[in-house]
Length: 403
Image (tube, rainbow, N blue to C red; front, side, top):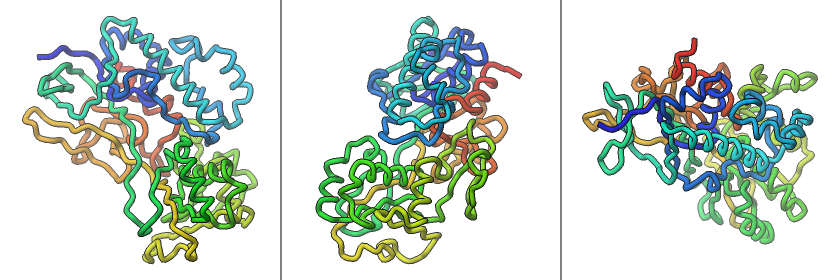
């Protein structure tokens, strides 16, 4: 039988770092590393990681990305740096997500150093995992080429999510690109050519990604855009999300959300900050380069609803959301174990945080991050800065038997 460690983690991004942030905060990082942690990451090293490298302002204030991280622990070098001290002085401001991406990479490097110092823990780079096995007595096994390399008492999925596929809603479109590639500035030449030709740009998704994409187009190509050249299509009424402080003196629409836990969770549910301001500007008629469609389950085909008026072949931007990226899970008889899920999320036990199969919790199988949200009173609790929220803390408390 293969060797055994305390914990295995699949994926090494912000969600996985959250386990170490919480462990450090609870003062048990050294103990966990001594008991053994093996991490499997598809990238070759930290420098290949580029999540959140979006040229848009954050939907959360700077302070939200910093809270919950211990300043005198394993991340001290980063948290006590002059740059972070400057950030703390403007903690209520937004910040470009490219800066947050760099900050998260620094935290990852701190974890790498801590793991490298431990003789019982290790990071396996260039090691994507497509299958894992659940043993009745040995816990969870990671297998390659039919051989189980390592087992662990517990396992955390931090494998993230990918862009959800979108059906062809507009026949003969110029092409479909993702909001992710737009916000990474990878589609600028194509967008510029479409705008120059006078063709429309259709963004599917009244989400934060959708309005952030629209905001990016305005900021980068605003002077070149004509009236109603951008079309934003939402299948439902667009939801705005506010903190209790933001809602004072604000007229809310039906369905808008006031979340008392905003600073801790920072969910993707509902528009915030710049995306919310852009939406309101469109509604009030101040931003005339964007035409908005809130279909609210209208049965009329989308293509028939769009007022494109023969203005040319449209470019489509897919901002319809994400779906979990998960490996296959098998029992000892090689029978696949199917996890309970929704269209965009893997389901968890609301108390233990363990993943569910047939409505029952799978002991010691946890997950965190995009695609693996906890459920709250107003929807899935997922946010950009999920690395320090309650999910990671609960996982660590269960792992280390902290009451």
